Image (cartoon, rainbow, N blue to C red):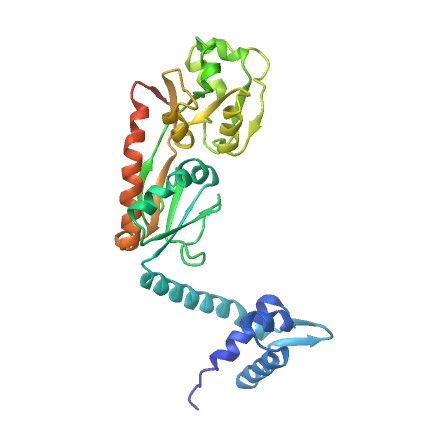
Length: 312
């Protein structure tokens, strides 16, 4: 007897029920009644000739056959969903979804968004600010600005900005800080966002490179896991932050913050623009690539006169 394919609707009902372990929740997801969903699953069981669920009072669990079928169904429908969303994005030339870290989004991207809008009014730019590595297909993301030392294997990837790290402060604080050693008299703000690196570019490293003798006790001061939070405290005039130029570029150019000492640390981590191969030439993506590189070009002037020390 030739093998017949099971009905797709019934397979979809099974996949949702197996994922939720609830006919009620699966029915709500699919927009059908629990009775209709139950009918679809019974139809699939009849087609298979074996039960897929143990039905108990207000609870269900998978049979051996159900456990064997569930992973393949989840994978299969996920693949279909990814393919459909990919095709939808190809048809959409007016919306571009960009994901980047919260600090870079808040301090660099968002303040410049109006420039992109002026240049490309036909493109609606949307941001997903998160430290999570988002999936281009599952999360419907077109472009990612990623920071780190990753190689982005399997994707189109190009450098955007490397940057440097150096003490940054309000102008009134800079007026009384004549030498690196004077920094020990100020409140030191610690940015711990780069502690994932083999050697963190922290206050200890910079001060030693500057020839400052450190006290025996650990350097005190408020600590932040988010770079923009550390920058914000320095903006309030509370103290001096070991700041990342990539987060503070707008503030440095405006003179709101000052990095008075030429000594600056560099690390292997950098910002990269990442997208699926082939997507980099899509009109909306290509427009964003051209724009971000053009915007970064003047910021590279902040490197001039810096004594850059690479610490790996």
